[in-house]
Image (cartoon, rainbow, N blue to C red; front, side, top):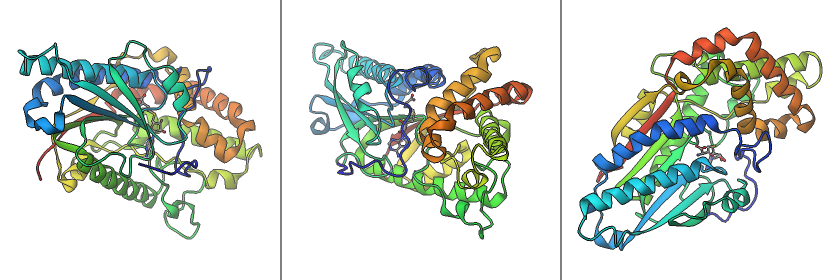
Length: 369
Ligand code: SAH
């Protein structure tokens, strides 16, 4: 268990509470993501979870589920409930004569950085829940659970957060120096390579820790923003939004509302891996088989008239913490006001980016190596 109670430099929790700009009120993309993923998860549990894979000692009439990077809800409660019901159905279909009189006790572990607003999370736990709730603080890039103690793990919209920014992005003498930009979109190749290397390192430690914690036969679902194979990141919605955010900040630097040096030293610790990259990283780890992998297009079901506004609100809920930390709280309204204006000015560019599927759902099963 983590004994780190300080706010770690790499942690940028979503905006807590339930105010206008909070994550709780502005996570509808993740919510529709959860809905699209739901049917895949149901099918995956029906088709691939085998209660008989687990030894009776490891089950002992309990079933452990973890949500890694759970934030403050409500999405985590919805998806945990879905998983629990799908597992109950599986029990019933596989062990019908003993169930439903004897469903296992479900324990659900809600994990996030220590700085996450766990108070909001726990005060909004569904009162009618059929599980025991546990908070697990700490980074999922390290160990969080005992060996072979988990049956099912989900992580939704979290593993694309890098643990740290590559140092060379801030080194003026490095070819990966990223002055005037805040991400690898439209940046030099070296910048992209530095992000790729950091993501690969983070994913290796994530998979390594999960391989130890998830028992053989256990499953893990990863839902994450992704870039389709061979499509430049500048052509997908998050890429366009980050680019517009970068140019809003540069405009503000030119007007001396913030300094250019502040923009030069700011980079978003986010990486959207392609299905091909994820496949390679999972194969390198070697402890999981990929039982399903799908790219969905979330924007196909979102009203394009309102997307500039909702993309801006969504990005604010997710990035306000990290932007305030770097630029201070005085400029935050101005930053997002300008970003919203840019989404109107460049609405065609934003809308044309909705064509690509950018939500990756990966269903993995822990195998014997
Ligand atoms: N799963 C929720 C929340 C996504 S927001 C949903 O789908 O709606 C992403 C969350 O991941 C944030 O709360 C952030 O703090 C958390 N996160 C990012 N990196 C993390 C890490 N290394 N360890 C634990 N949590 C992390």
